[in-house]
Image (cartoon, rainbow, N blue to C red; front, side):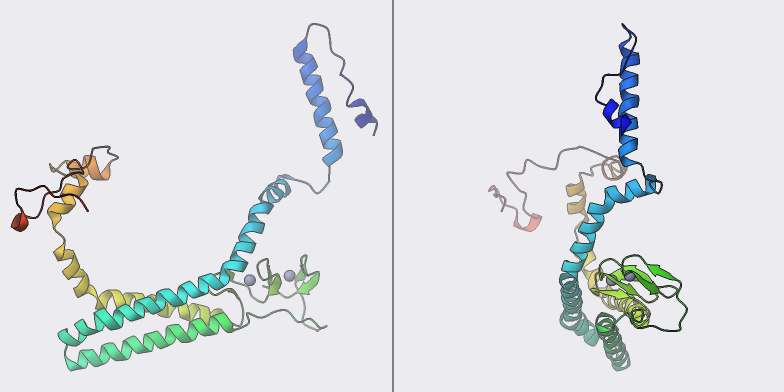
Length: 267
Ligand SMILES: [Zn+2]
Ligand SMILES: [Zn+2]
């Protein structure tokens, strides 16, 4: 308290030495700040944690409230890919392959889809597992500072669910659920079957991809990137370049077959 009372007083300094006065003032200010804020548990980790607290709060709340949106996005994106496979890829498979291969594609594709849907549904709807509320003989590893309750080994507190989770892996926004002891296998199997599905779709639709790639006129790409000489691949594509685009943007050249004398306005 004595230090605080002395704080507003101007510190004594030798006349004609403003630097010394400023140093003394700075020392008083630090002493006052240390006296007010001193805590034996305070260190730089606590300070950094406190500074990042608003960001943690924002991330927790955004993840909590947008969880449903993420789940809808997973369902929408997966359904879109399934629809594309039925409408675009399956006719190509039926046209191209023999009866045996068509049967294999139909069997594998639907089995993979079943695995994805089942494991995603179970991962979303299964409870990850919580520590028991009532008294038990199971030895507890520590006390959760948020729940103020004992927690078993490998249990962690999820700040988004605001609960302790048994063998917590992480909180998954794409499931809007925590991944813990009772839904870990469903989550892993979902990731595995989804990866297999992506590989299957990519391999099955490679013919469509090749056709689309072959339809690209490489000259158009060169024109777009501004490649007139071979070294331009390096100087204009791989290195930062501020060269202007081709043409003036007002008139456009038609393909050779349709080219006439008239000027065509860009659409
Ligand atoms: Zn807890
Ligand atoms: Zn959680």
